[in-house]
Image (cartoon, rainbow, N blue to C red; front, side):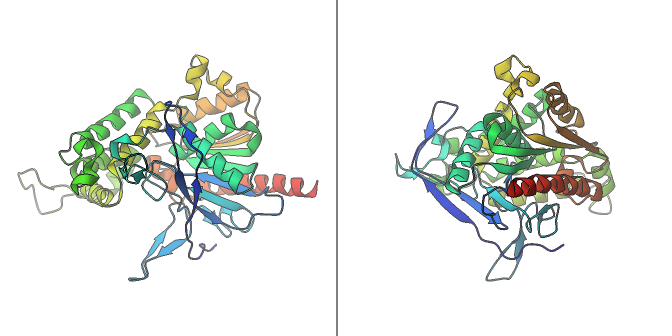
Length: 383
């Protein structure tokens, strides 16, 4: 298996306004995306990969810094590429940066045509369903009317689920990894604590910090630290850090005594350098709002009644952020509707982050499933 070579993003402008679930609309927006592999003649081998909170369209392959030669690999490069579980020798893979993000697609830091200034706090709130609608428009423009599969982990898995409900005829398979049909109260609480860290940072300026030439770094640091704690399992954290000290003994102050403190502060500092505060607020609210069963009195089985796709659902035993119990809810609702579903519950020690990491059992499950997807694509081509 090899990684894709150097890749480059593309962009597409949409003049037609995107009507949002909030009642607002987004007009004149751009989507940034990447593609890997070759689209076949009848466009039947396309797979859409939906990104999670702090990821982007850069799913696989490398960006190279011309000045230093340093490479930035795609966030799911271990999953997507030649000979990998999602094999780009067979499939045409698309990664899309969602609107509201801070990696190229129109977001809060871009110019609002109505004011001539950055959107800032005026950028409209978006939902998972709004993102799926934008992705469907991009697929239309690329001549893809039905995906062989739509795939995502975590928040990306929510988007894949939404695809199966909103556009049941437009995907043959749905791959949902380490995800959930809705956030628990605990998850919403973690998100709100993170948002409050940003909202109360003096440098936030009500979301219009761009005009002040500052970034609410302290708020972003704390938000990332809170989030990162929830991505790791207790066992994984204990194995990596335990109660190891940075120095020879306690410092008797409020600086960094323990290795885990140093790690979280490093992650927070790094995050505050590249992620946009308004984007963080928008995306965590989209996470909170996702609840497809809400329109059906909380009945997920009814919400899934019109789904046509076959499913792979995968979860990880130590993921307490989106626990296996939540994946089993999805499986049960699909079974209640007599949908075809494969479920894998993988005993991995890494918590929620396991969906991004190399694990032979996990990778083999996904690889085997995509072999079945490829069989379906090949059968369609021959028929």
